[in-house]
Length: 62
Length: 156
Image 1 (cartoon, each protein chain N blue to C red):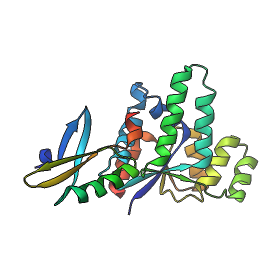
Image 2: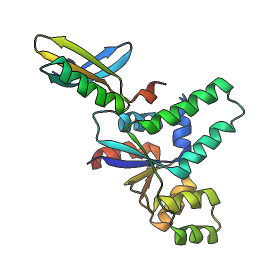
Image 3: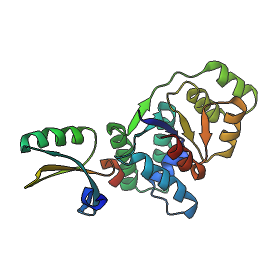
């Protein structure tokens, strides 16, 4: 179960932030994560639009 | 509510430097825990500590100009994230004077006098003198990096 909520993009660990009905809602959430200093990924699927957030803030990877 | 943890200058310096000295493993463990998006934790960066970190990076002659810029950028980026909060806590003058009168290190006295008015619940330092002085003065809960993670996890 935990594995489904964690994945790696470009060598960085991400955790599932939330799932949204529309891409627009997902973008709003992602923008907020960006402003808080995190990387994000938006991925669409049959079960909704998922927003993934980097496990650590951007400066951690610098 | 997020647990608020203050960090001493050298904890930051070793972490930013990406030190691979086994003695600094506990610093990396604590930082990984505090910075994890899933953990309700916030790093309190006292403005005096922030100034000292910047000073130490700028005056480190062993760093190339590129490395120096990179570390200063990282410090700046940290302050823009929601995991790090720069606090301009008012210094407790009576504590500052008491530490100076006791003959302690002046910079330590400045840090301790600011910690006493800080919103941080805990303060992590590898400096045993600073921990001893904090104990003498009963300033917050001051811990060494090796025991900090366990204490923070128990209090989160």
